[in-house]
Length: 216
Image (cartoon, rainbow, N blue to C red; front, side):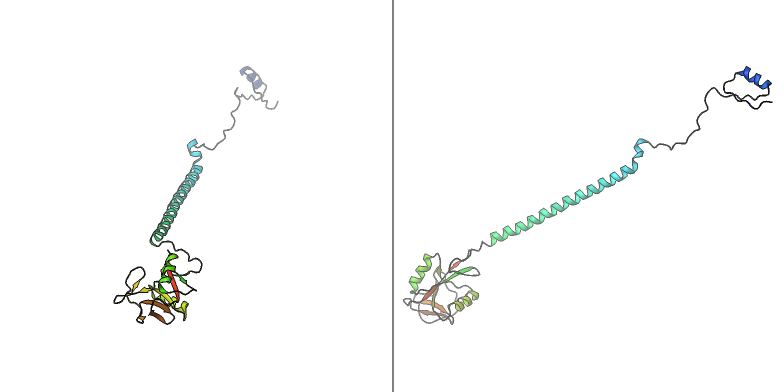
């Protein structure tokens, strides 16, 4: 007996003839066997495929948005700070005029410039010299100024800007009345100063003098 015989394209007659001879006949479909089905992963919708990316992108956009808000807020705070500083500076400039430096032989003490002469003259001539320099015979308004002048003059006598007429009060050269906040020793009509204090004398005596002017 013959062994099994396999043929792809036998019609019924051929298959019967083969069977009579003891051969096995196997019919095959005229169509090729279908390829085994492979299980592909189910594809996600297009709008879902980039979901993780969209989550990361949205997170980054949120972080960037918060950073922008922080930067804007920081700039606003900085601008306000600068504005406040400038405002305070302008107010101080308006409230306190610019202090000018004392030039040449003038000596600056707080709000005034003082000049100590090397020459000697009478009170009226000394007053005239101070006026020609845009100043006056020294006005003494504070104890600090008094101590400075006394220390600087030493034992030398210097005219200051106080005078009086007989029977009247002492007045400064600008016409304001002296408030007697320091003592003037003597019976003269014109005041001078040295390290020991303030005294009065007749105006025709030639001594040194002190001029003063504001630093503003």
